Length: 259
Length: 264
Image (tube, rainbow over all chains, first blue to last red):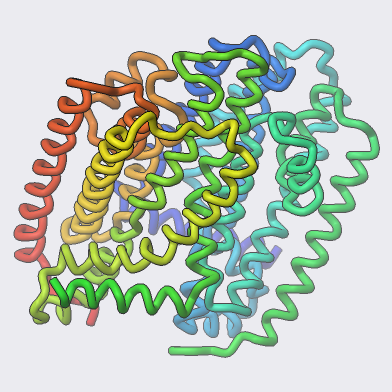
């Protein structure tokens, strides 16, 4: 309850900050809408040249793209603070966070929750539901599987954000690790079958982009084997456990500077 | 000129200290385009041509786009904003250098480190995908391509300076910088050749300078723009360079009048 109250207060402060720079916030929103709209147009253009993409129809390809956007919006909205964490560490401002009666990792990840990003979820969810409803043989089991695996995918994504924070504490050369994650996870915009089998293995077990985005969608289509569910749960558990261990280990190496 | 080259050298030495960071940024700059060759290869599926592009054309398009990105990508606006809002500009204004070319040369220090590394990787990779890479039809085509890459480099640098100088008037510019980044990639042809997109997108792109960042140079490399069209596009690119240069000069003069040196 304490952390929920703190999160609500931090979110309110962050929203006030975003509203004080209306032009800046609107530009961000417009840029994201442009990017989203462009990829919708691009997918439409691709399907003018082919009836299927790696065996998937246009509606199915759109579901991959929209699921990627759900993951991207939720993680970037909740964990916006991670993009500024490196600066806090370099300036020694993280000292102030450590003295607060709140979990330092929770504070660092969630201090800049971007409510404006949630506005963006409205068209995404609308289009997602619209395309899911036109799928053949859709039932409550598949929808539940989709949500179940999406949950574990978000845990893996959260773990990667924690990895990024932990690496920021250990080395000065880490301010763009989170951007590397953002670019790699963007591979999940399209069905994984467009990649070679070797790349699919890399992006399933080592950089689990396919687990985060494609597994839930394939479960929705009824094409995901049962053992993949266990792979997703196991990877989520491993990534989360290891990320917390790395964070705690990295905290021991933090030396305040410039405070 | 020597003092500006010295600034570039100092920036290069600074980047050498944080090598992993620079390599990370190089990977980040490249990764967002890498998925697209795979996407198009899966669409081709035995077909010889889509929208006037062969499979080799489309793969070469993205490799060349990445090459252009390496030569042109700049992240100046963030540093210019910091100089302005933190008051660091004060120290630079009293030095015997002009700030815009100083910033431009400092950014080149990054590029000098990243570009050779990238070209080496590209050269090695070309042996593995040689059947999917097209080389320019002639030396003349390649030289014209390099000329347009130079134009792209200047246009990109000017746009970054304009975004950075917006901090004189707006303070926070990350949103505008992000919007610029999206327009550059979408209307510049980084994500897909403009000729494969709907006519409405092509019409909007035709009126903006972003097409000269990726699409036009790449089309010249592939030999799809030739003859009088090359001259027309070169004239347009020069026109944009002149216009953006005017904007920079105006924003610099007006911005300095508003600048109060706060944040020291």
